[in-house]
Image (cartoon, rainbow, N blue to C red; front, side):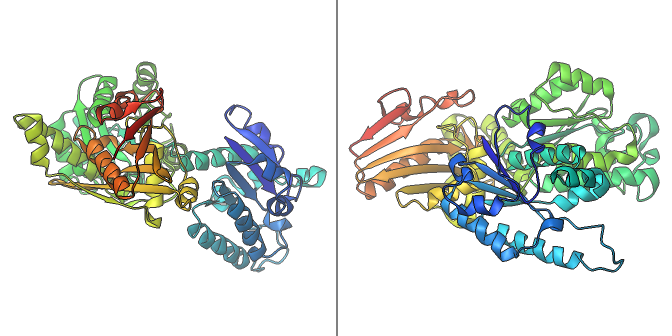
Length: 518
């Protein structure tokens, strides 16, 4: 992965903050040469051909027009259609001579213009640098001494913080986010121990220390509404916990907000392993929060794939810790899709389908009872975010194993020889939204299915076969005579290796299968 850094100040020390990331190839443009590098197609930037460009313009050294900045970025992106731009917004200046000098309104105007630009362009993401300054403090992130010695604005700490933030954004754009938040209950969602202190004596209120836990629940609720699945995992008596959820007046989180509850006296590692199996998700998609140092250490030993961050010793820091040490690193989100908003409901429906399968006489009767409906459509602009998300998160049935950003999907969509098939799923339990996508390249009478993928939620219902048959039928109407399907084995998609064979394709080599005489 290639990352280029452009700026109107010296950003070279940032490269040392990325030294441990061996997968990252870096390019730093010369001091204040950012605009020339963007516009000159023979520049070193263009030769480097980055996957991502990070642009930081220090407001104190900025004397240009925002229109010129955005025009330069647009010119470059028109040339590099799969490159993603990460632009730091302009930071406010706290060192003006006049006490009432209104510099903030101008900076607000610049940042609003940039935000509007990013909303109109899939290739642009804004890194909120002012949020970082509010948290860490201007004096901690900047050092004027370095500016006069070497045109460097940030301090050593500033470069470390910025490197972390860029990494979070890169993970977000690549879909490297976790899916499940597993939560302890006692001294985590509320203060105290339910079984010992009793429901009425727990710390959970609108005042004092209890407010800390109430605010924590609000943030967890927000994360759930962003599409993160919640699981409770607590050594407790389930009837007492259910009563707590139902009757405590300050419980913001409801029983139904959780996709699963593991409230028993079993080892938590066993419970979490069972959750992963039930949800058909990898352990590496989970984050575990527990106030107990012993429980955290045991989980790190037994299930190292699960992210287990340290819990704050000072409970007053709980909410700040949660945002900076859990949400930003593990659950970064650029924007919400409709599927994100319905994620918990979708997984609960899936569990209902599994129960239905257990009750039916045989597999055919089970499929018939679901009353499955597939709606296959062409790619539209509002599909791009979801399609990119599918490619980034789908593992078991991702036939090529490729991941795409929104910018790459948008670029392929503009290719007249590329066709997207979008699969929308519905059955008697409800709508699942977009669960599948196929990317097909057509040249004359031949088509190549470069990738076909389906969410693991719908596997085992013949959806993959129905989807492929629709694609073949559509290609036949386009007078296509030959169709090639690509399969590239990864660590996680081996279960799909015979998919094309089972649907009548003939192997050409290890990665290519042919279907003729449509």
